[in-house]
Image 1: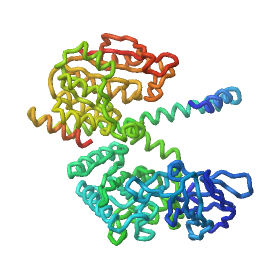
Image 2 (image 1 turned 90 degrees about the horizontal axis):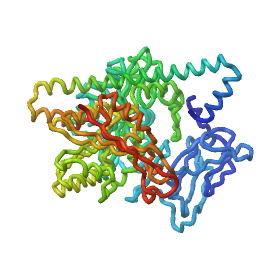
Image 3 (image 1 turned 60 degrees about the vertical axis):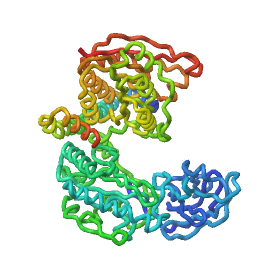
Image 4 (image 1 turned 180 degrees about the vertical axis):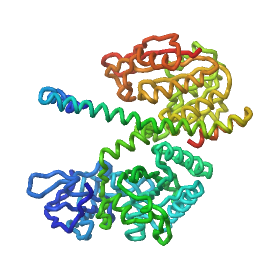
Length: 76
Length: 523
């Protein structure tokens, strides 16, 4: 947190405790919403790995397996 | 707020000196700066300037990117962009240089500043022959996207130029494409973008991904200039158009598709169905009036949404791209950690250097007969080492691996682990450069690579000191306890830990810097 924000926080605590509390809760909520949003990319990445690799790997022999992995790696 | 338009303001009292340009105008005005008759950049007097104290007078400093050119003489013209009325036109001498001021690149090609004040070759300094490959590239990329099932269209500055004048905008430097996915959920739109990138890679395009929903396609033009074609993904959700780059606005799908066409430099290209609404969403109602210094004003909530959904795979990338931009040569001497590992381990056990940088340690180990894999997210960093390894016929390979991208981590982990047997993974100054998410990914990759046994060797900063080392590397201090906790959370056992003081000669004096060496295994 920037020094300015910290000072505002300290000042806010004395001036209007209820508003200060709400501000804190909004900051925490925003962080939590952002965390939830970040799950979208994680889920998409995991699904991409599974869908792009699972079938080719299940069918591949040792040499093909390496080729499938190398091709996927190259495409990133 | 969208831009108020420059009107023909009465601009007076113009003066130019080494600090910048000052002018008086009560109204906001966009001004073009030309050197010897060629436009070099444009600015908004009030937005980009600071009041000088004299009534209605503002001073705009020279942009940092121009500083190195500003030594010599030029005929400097300042013109109101909208009317092209010259409000200043004089020979000006800046700095101590004797010749004419020339804003050009190493090959002597003219450069100007784009709206982000980056030095680029803008279209106004390029011939038709130069521009043709870009139009070919737009066609080519559009065809590739079409084959992948994506109906893309001209977007942003390229759309604006096409609709307004049928031409590329003179002060623009790249071409932008966009598409609106059929999907309405971020996860589905991201997966589609991954799939499209794969299709384009297979078709031979070189792609750089910016975010989970936008990437750049590199195009080599006739004079050797590599130009990026940006492809911005978008989708409709809850009655809003979301388009990377960055638009979020109430919109209807029927205003986008079925696509229409517009002419650009004599060729027909697809554009959104309702270009007026689309350009209004992009540039505001005043989109018809040219403004080369236009800045986007995006609501914070839109940034937050797009950042949360799609971004985070290029954190600190610009810093490392800069560090490795000159393809540094690998050092002939290895790090102390590499020596330490080499003293303790069998030289035939394969080593993976996670975050290998210039590849110095990887090369040194390979020269001792150890099979080595060097991994880093900036290819330029290890290119020289890769060339040396090939020339010397060493058992060393170098792969790009982005620890901020889970797909890259899993694919690299699997690729390395496809070769069976125990190995050593080195992660030198990785824990102190990565954020928590990327560290978790790094330890996941190490666990995969050590599937058949072996050890992970870590070294990271635990006390900064005031020496050059930490400052130069921008490393952040970590506590051994926290790093050990992260590793244990993924099933690792910490088998060794020691503190190393950085010798005075290596850190340039001051209070001592300390690093932690840690060895972990997975059973």
